[in-house]
Amino acid sequence: MRTEAVHVDNLKCGGCANTIRRNVLALHGVTDVVVDAESDTVQVQHDGALDATELRAVLHRLGYPEAGTGGTLEKMKSFVSCAVGRVKGAE
Image (cartoon, rainbow, N blue to C red; front, top):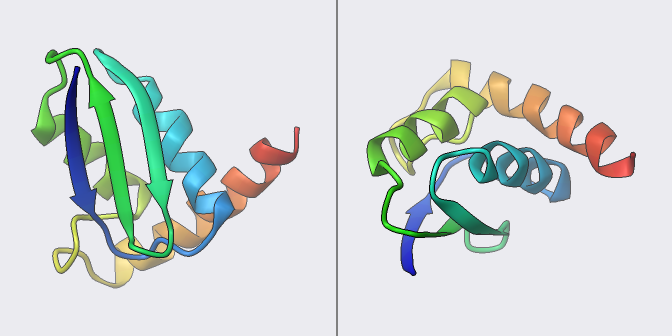
């Protein structure tokens, strides 16, 4: 197993973590995802088939870009992703 860690912006709570986990687990080769809101880190275990560029693109699309690379649009997206994560996490 290999590990890829990404420090991201806009990570606020468990809702954010739920959205990130659900979407990153869907990527080819991913076996586990640990999201730490205190350190703003997404740690991904994978079998070696994960494309790190694709991982960062998914995080960016959700509103959690690599630290220092996002802007207002990504911040707005993160609020929506967070809300969705809260609702889906409660199901």
